[in-house]
Image (cartoon, rainbow, N blue to C red; front, side, top):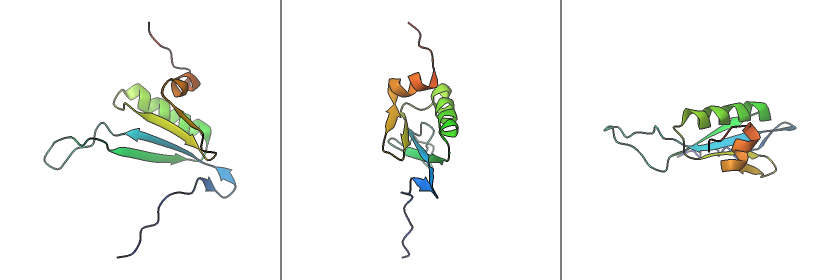
Length: 91
C-alpha cells in the first residue's frame, strides 16, 4: 500500500503558513448519527485569511473548539483568539 504523505509543512517556499483546527459539529455517520471528536484542519497562506476563517467558524456557532497556529508553533484559542478577532462579549 503506498504511503500517503502527511501534511506537516508549515511553510510554502519562504512564506509562513497558518493552520486552523476545529471540531466538526456537523460530522455524521452514514446511518445519520453524529461522530464525536472529529477535527478538521485548514491551511492558509496569510494571517488575515486564517483570521477571517476563524471568525466565520466562531460566529457560525457550530464549532466548540477553534484554534489558530502559525509556523512558529504559537497558538491562539479560546478567549485569546476571540480578543484577537475583536469579538464582543455579552455580560
